[in-house]
Length: 338
Image 1 (spheres, rainbow, N blue to C red):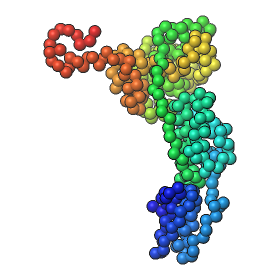
Image 2 (image 1 turned 30 degrees about the horizontal axis):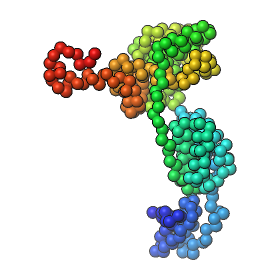
Image 3 (image 1 turned 45 degrees about the vertical axis):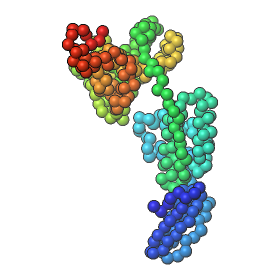
Image 4 (image 1 turned 180 degrees about the vertical axis):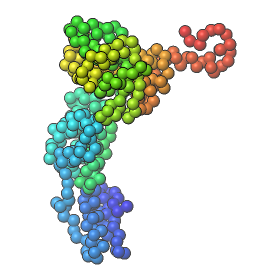
């Protein structure tokens, strides 16, 4: 390697045409620039010039984040979140902040500021991941060093899902207020577990005899695989009705955010968001006995670890294995579980 850490700095060690050059500088960005100068000088057989620190090219945060955004985040599913994160980073650090000055101490200050406004560790980690990507992008182009960004511990927390009486209250309230389309979106979501983006991308042809075909035609589903979700009677009736009556390409044309926020506030369900409906679907499937591997396929989880978060909701189902382990337990007529 031509560049390696040495003490509090970085050593440049270049060999060319039988000659060798070694020198230690303060930052990796300086080392990258010096390596280029030294290699060129040795090849040409002339002395290595002194590095003019002021000539080391660097980026401000805005320039770096703009370039990184164009290279890695445009037209991705996380694009809108990334835009918000970048805006917050600009507001805290400043758009012209030299990347080389965003060190571990500066990152600590950002974390403390986030905690002060009561952001969760998970939310802070998403923003740190965005910042880390930008800094690595700059580092790979010799514009800065990469500070060590320690992720915060995330608690798994309670998986919020709707009870049957809460579901009935939401449906009743929306019907009473006269919002039939929101009722339909609510029922389809809670009966299928579709992500909101998947629901909004449904087309009439997606409603088939064996269920609804789920696929995000713009970015692909979250795990990149289309799937068929079986339909309850009420969900099928809604989708078939919209399929017959809609003149639009999509079965649902928009998400009524304001109405949804109003109804959860009215019912005192402040800890409920639209994604809670997906948690509800998954929780009910597990609670009512569907094997976790089948739940994984239904929900479109990329990894079984995601599905396993719901395993504790069906502890009695583990007892079924008792009679498989000791034959005398299965010899009598007593059921393995209640």
